[in-house]
Length: 414
Image (cartoon, rainbow, N blue to C red):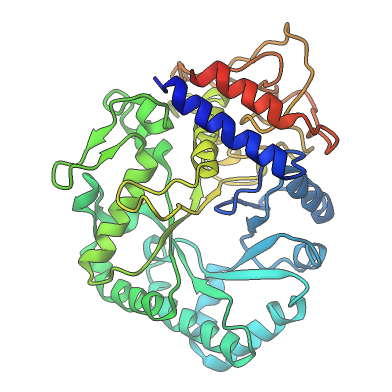
């Protein structure tokens, strides 16, 4: 149970933010971004997406390509964008000249008007089904970095996001280690990151761990609900009250065991599906809202992990929209905070409405029964929106948002 003093401390933080700025929707959180996937045929135009991000006061996003329409639409905005080199292009970038040409045609035309801050070379290449891709990764990363430097943009960071499956061991966190079969190329990659002072990005999904073993893994621990018993690493004695932080620290330990200690770990993807197939335990709007709400609270507090408490953890939520053309189980198409028509899939606690108190929280659209038992909202201000109701984001004139956030915190945290 969070103490009254803790609740009041958070309250005063929000009051200070309110008194010192013209907050319209949420306070700007520098360490929070969101993934903007496009595997769908019904998404809003990029200029509408830009408006949505601005309304949310989010200033960081990542796309999974170098879509010219998006890069042009985001010009002269305050959105920092990370772009991605598609996996199928990696083999071409072994050649420094090809890499220079790629940068010259895909990146340079949009600079500096569009704030491209990073390039992700491929996605989960270390664990891709096509194991021939891996040999091209480090040369492609190096060549793109060198091309950017040659063209005067060495400030753009070059890296690649990895699946948590790169780890041979992840529990307890201090046992974190990379799979032996990738150690050679992983060492080369880490050496590049260390030399260029670039972060290691990890796609980390506690949902998958819970789905695989819901009878053993406590839901509150996976969702990050407090208080919960969590786990204590038997070697470091560090206490973890949420699985995401344990996953991140496992990566830190794996990197350290390779001989590197100055590489920051960031989360390139994390999220929770709001709907799933009958066998996808835990996929529900309640759990999705709870997971993301708890994560956002931690971001607003600039938290670090137990191993790196003074370094705020940078996280990119997955994802901005549900994507109806993604292959795989139903959950793959239901990670979005928003529907393609810009209505909320569920409310993570960032929006205000004057919905009457009789409005009820909808039940899960999936067949799962595992839901958070501690997702409570104040019906006067916070609500979960049915996916069938088009509720637009609150406009900027709602200057009393922070008052309602304070009201919500007092009711739920004390």
